[in-house]
Image (spheres, rainbow, N blue to C red):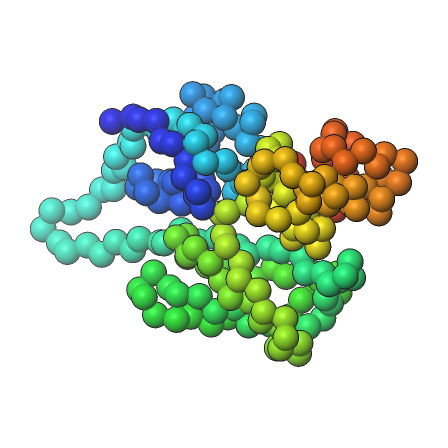
Length: 223
């Protein structure tokens, strides 16, 4: 039976689809009832708590099989790709080995390894199971660099908390990302503007600032 799902903190479309038994999140995301939601959230991995998502009825599949024989079916678990850029003091952490540790859905600790790109790009070739909430990242050639990456917790850039999260992650400290105005938030915006928009140091999250922040943080991806 179709229903409306209220997005919770840390949820993204793949996770919502899994909760309702869909193997492909696009069945939900592309449903005509979600046209306005999709327009407001063009990145299915960046949602906002309280968003309303229409979940259609599941259509049962059919597979011909002889009744007098045993049949084996394989269910493929949905996976997601970890894709981030690593920088320190504005410079890319390039060509560095790293380890990723997380608790798998079976409760056991998992470990993946890789090397960042020449631009600090970390795109993990071995995907993560949908449902993993956080990953511990350590640069093996820079042991002092360890970060906890919370998956699905980034808010859209169109809300103040999303702006604050991006500023904090880029090193422009503005305090807890509550969405509330504060002197620290204003100062962080001004510091970002002085670096990227020196002719527009207003301390306000105007369109020019959001575009610059999106380009710097999301590499031009809408969110």
